[in-house]
Image 1 (cartoon, one colour):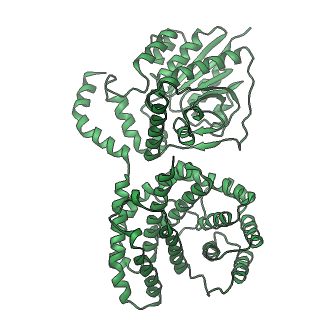
Image 2: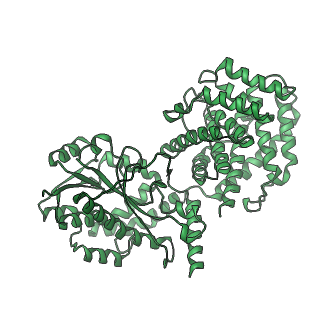
Image 3: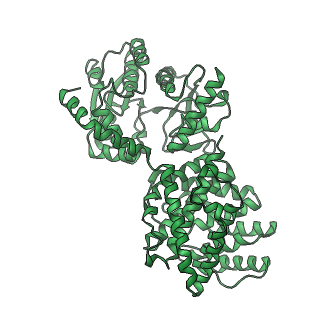
Length: 311
Length: 275
């Protein structure tokens, strides 16, 4: 080592080493917790303003927030993840954000029976062929199928049709993810959870390995999607849906690699999350910012409960 | 009988593993090292590749490599192991350039294994085999250059543990010290990540270790020994290959800090209970 190097080392060390330590540490759990508490407080402060409004949109939001308010224990800003109980609160919250997803996509008339819902989904797939041109179809299918229970036969028919519609070979050759394709994976995983089948498992295995590589190798802060809208928040939501899928997949198939990818992806989104200010007036009517906030909170809770379960 | 012509691909000029493998090949009868190439440290393409691989950790790597005095850096391999290995292989040089210079071996520094300069360098040497050291992605053109293939020692058991972080992932996957599947695998390089035919596998025993930091001392000697054994097998035409099934293993990636911490604590606990 030269004398110049030694001098550089002595001079730079007090500056560089703390910086390296900070960079290597990355985003810490306490950073996420702080953000979680901030988002919750801001969402809470919104409630009063939202209750004053009487538009159709806000009345739906009112129901959601009223519900959330009743989940005080879950959203208590003082508790930390160590004391969090994986309980009804979280499960119900999943249903809540589905409501918001539904609110955004406006899937149409209320459905009266399972059979009717099933026919509607099958019709949606056969007629519209969900694709890059009709990305909302996948969202609608997911929202409808998540809220009803199918018979075994219906579940098989639906998953077969979905897998046929976007063949597994397409996943193997996929260069960029299509906008809203996350809903296809979420629907199939949901169907598999209710009625496990080797075909669905195989399909999800191929698709998830491809997704894992895309997220781990590229490490985009906000991913790009084929056919994406310009809005950055919407892209962050789609990415959050994939994180949600990774966490669910990790839980269902007991594969920590997917939790690992989700942890890193959530950290990458942290900076974006801090820029979401739900209290800013213009943001009040932006359901996308609310939806992103919900995904962030849900993903955070899921990831912490999964980490806690690692032996 | 003609000698087995070997080219060695290394990440940096002073990499201990590269020096040991090169010296081992120089001294091995029936093996002729015809060329060595090392990657330039300061080149745009190298920095791009390293940034893609290391992202934010690149600053730490540059700092440790160029500014931190050797006696103050947290060396991965202990001084004792380094000294033992240098003694075993009678290695006195600290750079490949000097080692090659003293043995009349062609040596160049290049931007990467897949670039034109390297391809032309290797093509002229007509090697039977290339020993790949480091984790640079190799393209088809490079892989197709040697007559018998490109060899690599992977720091994990294949096909189960492909990719990166495979010294920690098996710890998270296991319930006891005995079932932690750690070791190295000698394999031919293919286009996929660690998917090529397997020649040799060697496991690592965790008995007697204090914590995960002690593992490095186990890996380096085993990797050099495995490469040595593999070279002799190929020279003597005694190798048998095991083709990997694409569905047999999983690809792993860098562990998140929190999972790495879990793995470290788990191993510490298992080792403590074993004492």
